[in-house]
Amino acid sequence: MTASEGIRSYVLDSAHCGVRFSIRHFMISQVHGQFTQVSGAVQYDPADIGSLQVNAVIEAASLSTGNPARDEHVKSADFLDAAQFSQITYHSDKAEVQPDGTLLLKGEMTLHGVGKPVDLHVKERSEDVKDPWGNLRFGVHAAGTIKRSDFGITYNAVLETGGVVLSDEVEILLDLQFTRSEN
Image (cartoon, rainbow, N blue to C red; front, top):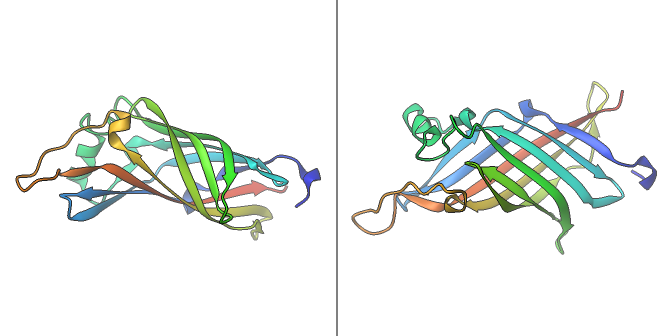
């Protein structure tokens, strides 16, 4: 890629992505979940990776933990309140190359109607590859951590033995694939 190529725009291939989360439950194990309806786009200048901009939208009601009763509770007003806050959004406008060569995305997440700064660490990024249909694709693996309480999600219960039912910290794990038409 050369500097003369300018800004490249890619869209999220939602059929080939995973937007997952993990939260500590009863202070003894992790509960995992995912969101199945995600859309987004990326723009950047290949000559300046720091110009990378990400915009993503997650449909809150698409949450799935593999347990329908738990899913309904997490979608309720106790947690996501998906009826009132139907979308979770993320917008980054800056990427910083770290000493180890990875990228740190600096952006804002809006969750439960509250916008807060959230950094995402891009641990892996593939080079562009051309698929059999002539499109360019690249993939990323990224992760970050948020605190539920920062977004006004405070539902919890104290355990008889100490500790709480749910940790405040939620780990975010992203495996994303983006595509760009060369046609």
